Image (cartoon, rainbow, N blue to C red):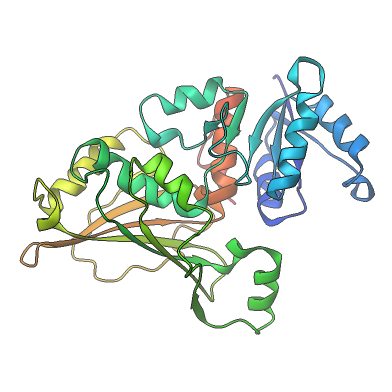
Length: 314
């Protein structure tokens, strides 16, 4: 069996640790490491980049840009790169790592030398909106509102410490300046031309995520029924291994933690035909399909490997 050498640059953080856990038992992957006391040594990082077939960057944005420059200075442009930061999601020459985006996107990820892993919130938003925009059900300039709640693990070490230390609130809205860093990514890949109102929040649970988008159906040009929205989503993801369209089937409550530890993304359409209203909902693990699970899925595509459910479980 051919072993592919993978270097996780930044494997001490939450996403890096989970990627390492997902890859550690794979016989087709050999992890390239750096001693703990040399993690910030540029020479050690350059040696690791030179020794691997693919590097996963789990770094702050500026450090990720530096790693890309370092890799680019190596012979033949260095290893293939998968960036889990926000630094390259809109950068020229980088492929967006949401293989379910369109029929061509998985092929693009397979052939790419540079792939940018999506953000957790955009994963849910884009999965819900892009098929409906492509189908002409939601106009590209439609005024969209997005509400979302994530577990506190998405906020980094400081937020994790505050919640686990008991000093954080039970729930809070944030980014109320309406300039969240994921907005450009959401606009670029959802197909929207008008920036949506995006209201993220964080709750007192470690991981899990719900993204919801309310719609007044009579304001949409084709005046769809809730079933039309569900049918358009189901058609887009009919062949997907990881994205499932789940009939609401009378559900009136939905909790965010049911998919924790998986790479699954669930989409639902909740509708009230009499009121002509609907709510689109995506549920995912912000550390799974929203981060490390998606990274391993993309890594497997880039290296031509199998990405089975067991390989993507935390």
